[in-house]
Image 1 (cartoon, each protein chain N blue to C red):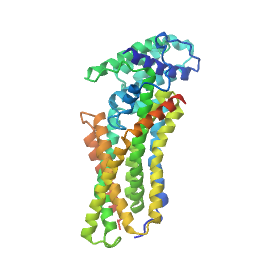
Image 2: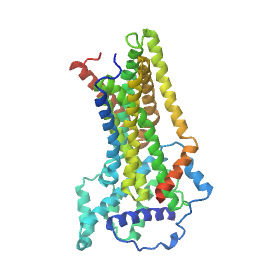
Image 3: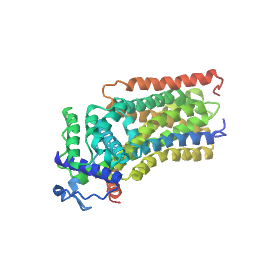
Image 4: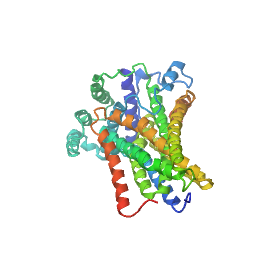
Length: 311
Length: 123
């Protein structure tokens, strides 16, 4: 558990340093061996490099909670930056009020965490430990205690990169599908583009956040998030190149068939399993799938009624 | 049926818009309040919505566009052949996707990613 604390501590330190802009003079006596050489032991690398499934987090819900916790800390840091130093005495009260204003969506743990002053790193460790404790009740494996903070960071970046690769991979057929569909029937293309855009938003988030939290560099996270989305227009341009030079209708038809199969595979292999992992009780997933179908069906029917008849 | 006429600009614009949504998500690193919006249910709902639209469009629209395009008016196959060919290409698409998933999980790719992550972290 202690190593995990150190990891949190480091991340918090990065955030605090970022927002306060001051040089950090706090020394960690217990973390003397933070600096690792590039040639580390093979066992550690093996552990990192053998994912059970590329692009799938082992525990997306825990990751999401971690991100929300980091966001809380960041929001808190932002607020602390805005406040003057004199207000630090009644900081707790103002935080409480603003949290209550924000609509009660914040859970009790976050709430308690927000109320803790963030100036002392010692209190951060305690708070994060308290907040992380309920997660371990749910039969989840205990956090790997032998991992180094540096190792954890590498794992985080590695996770972001794996997600980026997986997303770039499935954005490619999605871009191709949108392009092909929009070419043949703009109304279908619009609805498809909106649907793909909706789920691209959380995907960009899933790539950018781990890289940002590991490196402390916003632009790095943002850049890698964007890079995973670039494959979509690239696919469209490639599809255009193929279609513009295609001499036969058979190429066009084959592209349609392939794209249909790939989209079904993406939905069933990536989108739905991930959605169910975020929502294991299935409170929204099935209904949102049906809603998606209904939305596109209604829009297609409406387009027909309004007279944009298909050829 | 002409292969690509007139709509190419619209189509590429739509694709760029869909891709730009990724940048919107990635911009959450600048605005932590966006992260607070991304609750479990919101993420699950958006993924499910997209999955519904994509499967419906694939089965109902794109597949039958493939049948049309293979059909006697376009590629010149007769109706039965067109349907069979569309089915064949549909499952080819599924296999293609499965192959690309398999390629990505080959050991060389995660090793490369690990190398990249070390570089990113220390750069």
